Length: 499
Image (cartoon, rainbow, N blue to C red):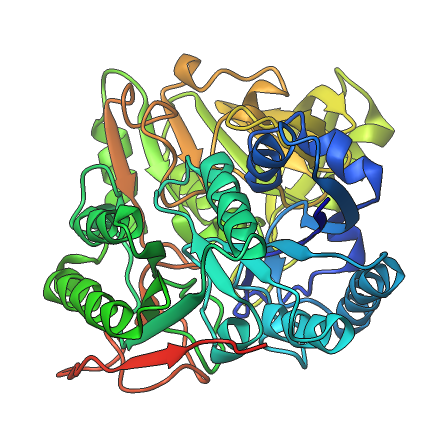
């Protein structure tokens, strides 16, 4: 009876966000609580469980889960040390196992450990030894370090952006792990580093140029010697020494095929990389577009403050500009401001308050903006996502109405890649003339399919698609688009563990 350990540690950070993440920004689950929760959501562990569960001969050992309530700034060192200690202690306390499935992100970084996933994998190897197979699932926005590949047997990554294959990725990882345990696969991995940081609509895998690279990877993975393949585009806001894009291929004991196909995928990606940028509109032009807008809902995309990419969530730049321009359309927007929420709770529903909004977490980029508002709703901020059913915890939350602006104010940042934060607080974006979307891309039915226009704004923020604005210090140079005339000669690095 194979015994399989399951553990999770996931967060995506922006190192440009000055507000450090803490232990309280994670949902911590242990033991059977991990299994019972993930059976209710269509994420990676849920997908892995769907593969493991039908086999009565498999014994699961759910060990530890630290799942980000939201992305955020660099993880504070004390919080990282606590999470790493709890994670590794759960590995030590587990009974002997035959295999390990780790669910990770790939763009987690603490103040001192800039390759958090690689560290956990290396330390796990020290505990379990070299003969226990480990398969890791990762977000394609992860940063595939050598240490991560060296200390795992195989990597499996998402194939979609916006991400809709969490569940399927976990299932692919679980199936591969079972093949390795059964002695039916001997993974070898080829990895190619690509000097590019990319953004924009061409990354949408169903319609964009990036999808061509992913489809090559899927073709390779589904072939007889293929085990896993994909492209990591990294998180451009996690400025660490290994930050760039990567193609990778895992084959069954065929290093030449892995090398050849990883280079093919990388060359296809590089051929299209110049197109992977975002045409941005200035705040002033955005205001003029809003003033001229007449019918339907205008979606104002403030991806520079995308909390799912690690931004602080306290940007008031769009609100300030629309107020200054005299925009009168009914506008819905999210913002993080714990002090404004406390004031609203003290006043109560129906009360009028005078407060400032925004500029509390990233004061270098944003300053507090004064408003008078009516408190329309108060909540504990706990809700489930519209997309996959995950539990999110925004902390105490208030809906404030200031003139024609409806502001959903949370105490902490929460992922905003769908509409659930608005819906959970009684706000339907379709009933507004304009809605501020703090996510670079949501699934198309969330906004793009029905909004009259999508306007991508060049606003300040720690997840700005205007990458040269951010000031990278650690990533390899030269790199597109931070430098001009970047050359690329694909070289595949081969990894194969020999227990």
